[in-house]
Image (cartoon, rainbow, N blue to C red):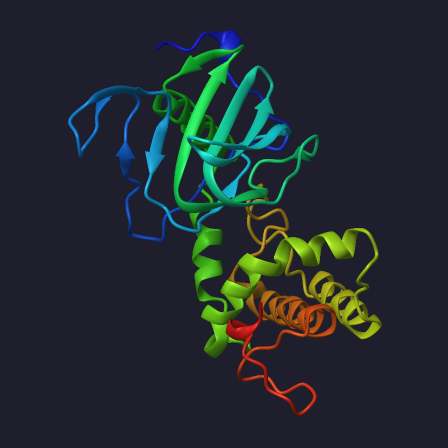
Amino acid sequence: MKYTEEMILHSESGYSMPFEEPQGKDVELSLGYGEQADPATGEKFFHHGIDFNIRCYMLSAIASGIVSGVGNDPAHGICQTIRYGEYEVTYGHLSNVFAQFGQRVKAGQTVALSGDRLHLEVRFKGEELNPIEFLTMLYGNIRAMRQAAGRDTAGFSDLEMTLQTDYEKDKREIEELMLRFLPHYMEDLQRGAYTLPGHTEQSLRNIFTMGAMKEYFYERMPSMANPLGLGHKAMPLACKVQNLLIGDFLNYLAMRHEVCLPTVDGSGVKKNFMTKP
């Protein structure tokens, strides 16, 4: 399909791919768009989207949009549809939905969690499109924005990979906890059910004041992936912020959900979150 000027997606917050594979792993389709053959029976059928074998992956909004539908489809399980201008993109086979009906989203914002796989459908003005063609256009938009900024965002990804926090030994457990509880944490913060402790807030203020004084910010060209322009000079600051934010998340879990890491003994009692309902 040739995309006309009318079909070019515009987004104030930029653009993002729906998900990311680990570094060094290619994105692979498990089922394509159009006429397909059932691997078990050989029976032909028309597939209205594309599928990826990605289990429990964080899924992102691809641009500025609004959630236009959340439901449970007999064929595709839990589904979420987001409208981006004249486009509607649907994620199917989800295990959790973080952005609810009517909520506005921005590019790169986590909106859902895939289940055992991801089914993706795309429509423009109600007309069904091959999602591969749409994703190709989307990737072109991302590359164009990087070129317009005069740099690629890979440098910031390298910085992220080298950040070391005080929680490295519990990294896997913390990531699993985040998949389960981070939406609740963000929601409770937003509605005031959980308040950031005063010492944590003051520490963050001090860190950013120190960063400004030492000119840690804008070492690189700011971008959507790295809005403060952080470079390797700012790694100590970034590590301190990471430690504070992870520590507060764990504090929230202990206070609101009575969930602790197996290696944490906040009040003399160790609790294994894997046994928590």
